[in-house]
Length: 53
Image (cartoon, rainbow, N blue to C red; front, side, top):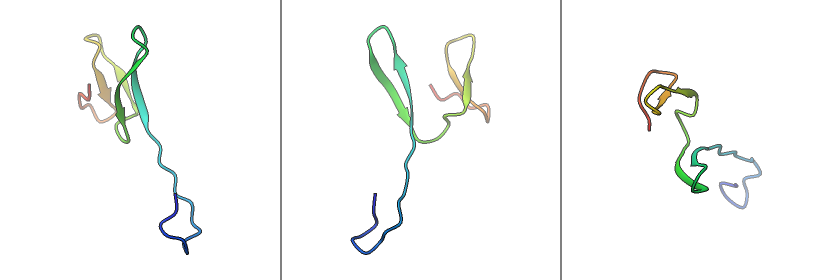
């Protein structure tokens, strides 16, 4: 991605996705809160302890 025709700096944009494997479908796509764990209630908890999904 370039800011303008004169800008030669490359910018990267990373995302992570929660995917329903049985339906082969992306359920949620995020740019933050990708670092976390699933809890026993099948909720995605960010590394900061926030329930994301």
